[in-house]
Length: 351
Image (cartoon, rainbow, N blue to C red):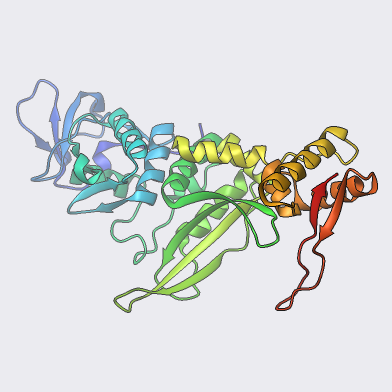
């Protein structure tokens, strides 16, 4: 799979300690030979740190490591002193992370359920730093991006796994109607930037991976906000829209939580278009007029869109046909608004 290289224990820095099988004492990694059998490593740790149990050599070209990197980039951090940290208040997402990390190492985990945090020892952070060349420190201040081993990969399955965890942590999906009643289905993601007008590397890297999956995005845009303490923040966002893009996203990426998965499925279902010559669609529109009339005395195209989930433009055509066939009638609306642009929507009732 891919062109990623294996990471060996002897590539870790001096001060790394290993406990070999059937041995009682840790030895420095520099005291081992590059030809020794790495499967004999029982535990590994940094000087003065907690040990973990992990298999060497490490193959980063796997589902688990791609998911882990997406999780750390979105909801975690890497520090040379405190190790690798992950926290997220979504119980489902947090539990999935615990199951994920447990596939990589079963020792050294410190789980604090009261704050939805999972802490890994310093040695794990060094594996990410030296193995994946992932910089330590603050993601925004250090402008941290996606490791080159994944950024240069053409393995779409691997890319999908990483982006799934990244979007679950830092992304969102919304379905809403604008002031004209038109429905919008949008997947978004955003990252902080350290400078004004400078796109963060993580945003640019995300776009690059999405392009490899043939997913088109909106043009990234910047939001500048001022916190209560007077600090200026720069946040960059991008959107994914359209049935084709959302379909590919679901098939190749998707979210990790059921709530987000259900919302994405609902968004795709809402793309159903009525056929203008389909009598069933016309019947549903007339039914919607009757329902709204019973509730409020009349129906507008926006009321019908809410009930039928049809596109407003097509509802207008179906309403015109229904009026022509004397199945509904217009009782008001259409006059120009006193303030602003446009006209008030027509009001319909069933005959």
